[in-house]
Length: 286
Image (cartoon, rainbow, N blue to C red; front, side, top):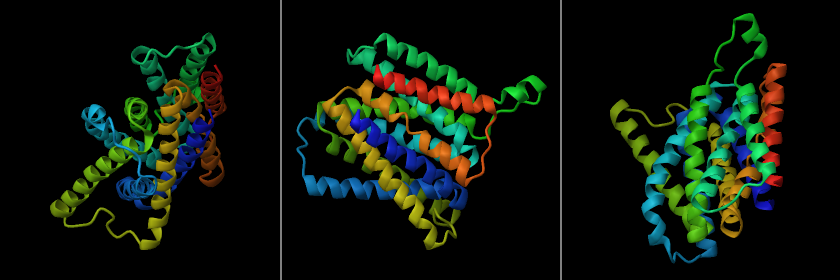
């Protein structure tokens, strides 16, 4: 559970930084810079620890294609956080944890307690409430929150990607698995940035001032440290438990969205946020 909480802190601040950076320099520049930072940080950790790569050949066949899922997940995530209300989208994104939990039960022979089953139900109800303003539904003026489609896509992609990383960490170890995952993902983003340069004649960041680079670089660092904690927690414990506890991270971006971005969710959406967090806590405690 401790590793799950550290993961929640890293991912919570990562979501907040992503929303702020995306609104300032756009989601594409943010995702490229953040992944460059993440690849650099995990490479430094790898050099300092020098872990064994024994057994890597048995998981590499899954890790490389999984990196493509990671790329699509980050593109969807940062686009969602650039467009939509952070206080609503972040709890919805956290429902990604349902996927690795269910996959862990189905494929890794981990089991769910009755309390965790209740937690899944509560989380799903909360996720539905966060996506709509019930007052607008009753008035016939309801509309889909901006960025919701991107958010759902990100949650599904991250669910599968994090399960694969957690499983691979159990088979090998956390640091080399995460290094392969993040450097491969950055390689894809780098190719994309170079292609954009060739096709459109401009860099990925366009006319972004150097001073704006600090936020996405910090984002990449806290994100990869959170993911490292997730991977290590999965290595020494259960993928289902660390996934559930880590998914309490929306507390940070929700309050950040309200305090820093002036977001004002509807009362029913506040209730949905509370239910998502409650359900995820039940999953962790259970």
